[in-house]
Image (cartoon, rainbow, N blue to C red; front, top):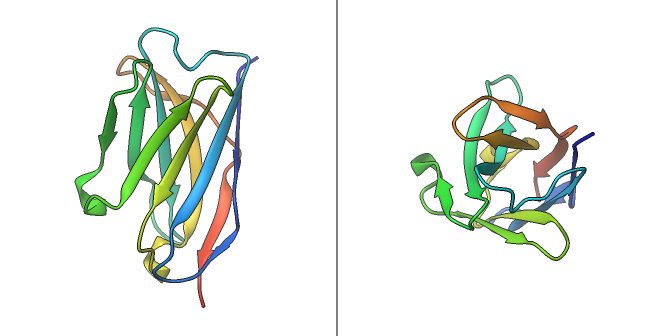
Length: 119
């Protein structure tokens, strides 16, 4: 059974960098045609795709984040990470990681982790 678990600090101060890790079990992140995604949901709003990293290490980002996001993978730990720089309170959200095979739907998802940006 494939499981994804997000981890990281729940509170980040404005202007700092948000760092999250997604640990994958039951699968290997370098498997061909797999894409590993970060998605968030701000309070009262819909889901927003942040970006992804492919099985080969290619990254893709939402233009709406103005190049503040960086996604990396650590194949030795079967993890991938998100860094979001220069955060503001508008970055407060539940952050999810999710697997995508080729261009199909996201499945499975992690349980999500709440991140609040506040001083």
